[in-house]
Image 1 (cartoon, rainbow, N blue to C red):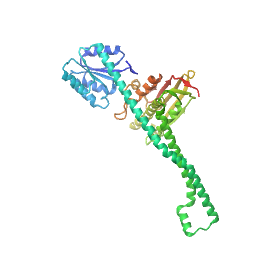
Image 2 (cartoon, rainbow, N blue to C red):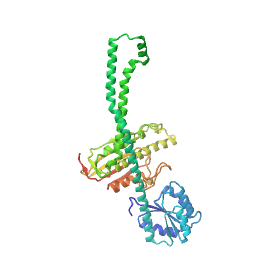
Image 3 (cartoon, one colour):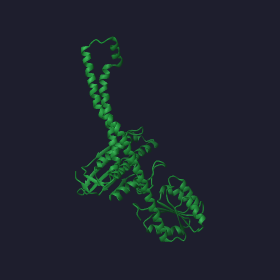
Image 4 (cartoon, rainbow, N blue to C red):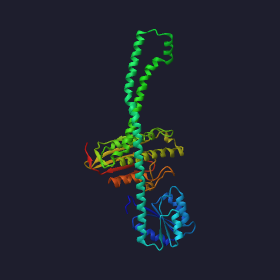
Length: 413
């Protein structure tokens, strides 16, 4: 099956024999299989498991399959999971009812093994394809929006930035002229003298240079942000080509700068860059930048979650905690492999969570705050698009490290 991870399936049936048969069939086909013996049990398990697909019996004691499906589709966290009904019913009305509730298919009992596996694979592949299309459209729209904003900001900022040196020169000339007036006209009229005191001329002469310097720093900062936005979007570099990955990491950090700043709950997050001497690396630059964005945003979330846990437990440890993200890069194996490591000292993950993080739609975030697509797509970009690896090392309470290895053809600078 064309998936980038072992797909997980939840089988819901109140018949032990059916459960046993399906469990064995699916496990032999390398699926991760979980079981539930009732609709109520399925609803309890599904949010924790977030399987890729649900096989759901229609006729069950307690709440039947139709009601179970209705509740699954009413839950924002589970509504996108494909449901295939299993039933001995042959009535078209019942099948139509199930499809209207959101089921994607039916398996008629007694279940034919080859047919069941074929239908399951089709729907899993469709789901993965849909996820990729949605993400591709999302990234394309985001890239276009970022590039458009960067272009619109760039023009007026460049105008201001380009005119600041002239403004500085004109002001210097006027100050020099004013100084000459002070030398050769030491006793101005009472009206002029009163106005000089009103505007505090001495303070104005000292402060105006500082003001212009601040304006120059501000416009330089905006120009840096615009440049980072353009690098991040990479709309003009959609092809596979040699790029400087440090530039991509730095542009991503620039975009995330507001999230790295100090908040009411924590200090500013310290970013330690341990950059090696990197060659240019062949890759899809925009997609790799999206991987950096997902991993760095997750690192910030993990640090904030650690602080929240301390606050909930009223632990004063947060006051001396120094939040930190470390980015390390190096080349290995005679310039044939490149390693990027992004680690944080955030909340960390349990073994159970760590084993699921690359699964589609799996998320530990509250409803509305996470889609469960970020890491799955990052994994797909690294592994499928670039033939690399993306691994995670983490311990609960001790932070997390993501390690990317890109076995690309590199170009020495």
